[in-house]
Image (cartoon, rainbow over all chains, first blue to last red; front, side, top):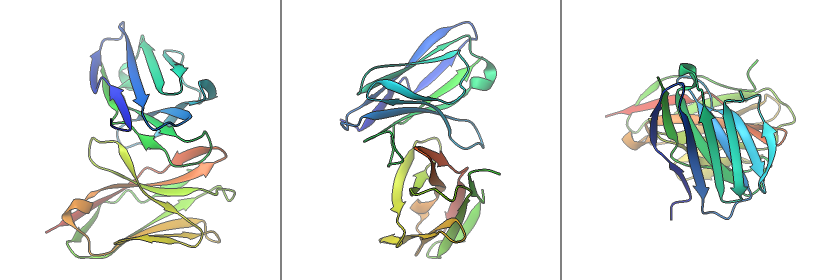
Length: 113
Length: 108
């Protein structure tokens, strides 16, 4: 099983839709992350979970709502998004929440119309 | 000032060339550094960690210069398959901070 998986790989949604992104890690890691990558911008950290507890919320608008039901799964619930939210959303995991190597999933390419 | 800064490039080099990228970081307390590789429309993949003593992995050499607060990546004998964006990563406290990436294009 691939280390970190994400679904869907591509998503197109209207501004009034509600959708969810899913991430699953098979590496036995204890920390999971959501990043946003927009064109020509560095990766932006959105949320960090350590052992299912949110330890970082990087001033992300409330239209993005994370959920971590267990240490292997991470969701990002989306509602009333804006066109500027169109980006590649990457999930990552690491052994712990500290500054250790992170391993990324393939990402969900989101387009908001 | 950005926490981790890289020249975006692109660096266009012929196959077989040696190419080096530098990356500067602003947080003198940073302890962990990495280089990631990201292919077009794909996720970043860990290339190598950067240790104080420097480290080498085949054609790739990474070095850390704490006095000048930069890390470097040297690629020897470039291959066409090395064409990608290389992301420099440092830590700010417990979190990793990614640079904007340096794009490398290796041409025949």
